[in-house]
Every structure is written in structure tokens, then in C-alpha cells.
Image (cartoon, rainbow, N blue to C red):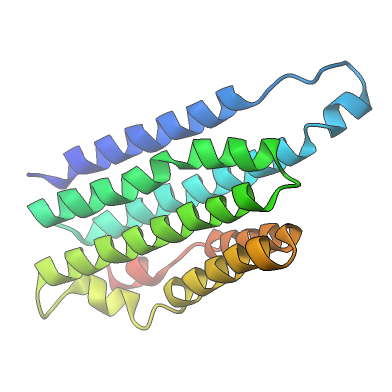
Length: 190
């Protein structure tokens, strides 16, 4: 299978997820600043998740620049990633609507952690398929961002459940900020 089919499918899924998220945004109950302010947690959760989906889309695009042939393992690993990303609209809405509750904030972190693990697995499957001279292995290197992100998600989940769930939003936003800076490792190898 050629990689363009997998990329087009993944692009479509991510575009649909972003569309679902924006459709979940509710109109303010009134036409004043107070009504708009009441939607701030929901809108903040939307912005954070939009950024996350954009980061995954961008990195997925770069990742498949080094892939020539798609294997069955890559297809399944990619579907695994898309499964976790497909839960983003649900947890975004839940966290935004219940911004003062710890469980929705923790579950949001669990979904983000699982998506990060799924992306890690996808990278490893590609590296394995490329063999000992893997271009992706050279590009990824020690993968500091990929190592620290799951730890920050776990800290956010723990914070939500055992301390202050508001701090979790900070952990999740910090991970997004880390990844918001474009990753040039694959471009350097190409």
C-alpha cells in the first residue's frame, strides 16, 4: 500500500474530529460579557484540544515523509493512534463542561497519555519496518519531548485526582507548548 492512502485517511479523521469539537461549542446564554465568560472553560478546553490535534496532524505529516512503504503493522499502529485521538472531542467537552471536577480533567489526561503512547508505538513500528538503517531512528534520536510528555501527563493526572485539578490544565498546556515548537528532526535527516 502506498502511504498517501494512509495519510489521506488520517487527515480526514483529524479534520472530522476538529469539526466535531467546534460543533460541541454552545452558544452563550445571553449577549453580554458575563454570558461569554461562563463559556471560558469550555472554550479553553477546545483551544487546548485544537492545538493538540494540530500538533498530531503536523507531526504525523512529518513522520510519513520518511516512510516509503506502509506495512500492516503501520496500519494498525496508525489506527491505534486515531482511536485515542477520536476520544478527544468527548473528553474535551466533558472537561470543559465540568471544569471544576477532578475526574473529567484526569480522564482528559489519560486520553492524551494514551495518544502519546500510541504515537510512540507508531514511531517504533515504522523504525522496525525500516530496519537497522532506519532514517526515522536517526531523526528521532533520544526523543526528549517524547520522553518527558508522558511524565507530564502522569503528573497532570495525579494532580487532578490527588491534589488540585486546576494544576493539571497547566501540565497539559505545558506539553502542548513543548510540541508547538515545530520539530525539525525529520526535516534535518531528509
